[in-house]
Length: 126
Image 1 (cartoon, rainbow, N blue to C red):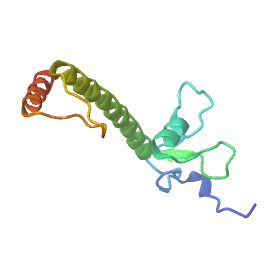
Image 2: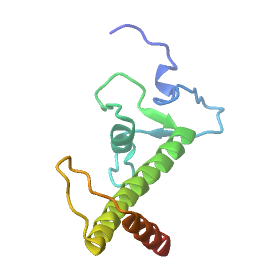
Image 3: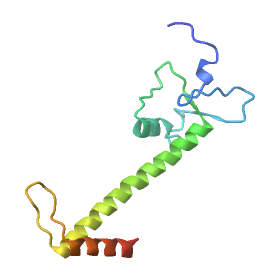
Image 4: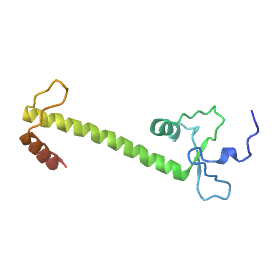
């Protein structure tokens, strides 16, 4: 292993900001000993597609700012997935009310009345 700078492991794994002893921002361990407290490693891998391991030689901390952004992004991602599922369920419901027919390409024929009804139902739900 090559010699790494002494402060290498004190930089944020995500943004490379340095947070030394005088820093007002906190350093959070990616891998907390108490697994119930920290899901940072899972959130990094799931939301950013960055592989992290407690065995790698890279920094094992993230700054408070990145942890906050990651938490917000994770919440936004979950909301987006939930919204997508609800919208798909709504389209299925609207289709069942309108009785649309499948075409060979897999798309559904849309009639003006269906579009009107779809918009009406969507406004009622929202």
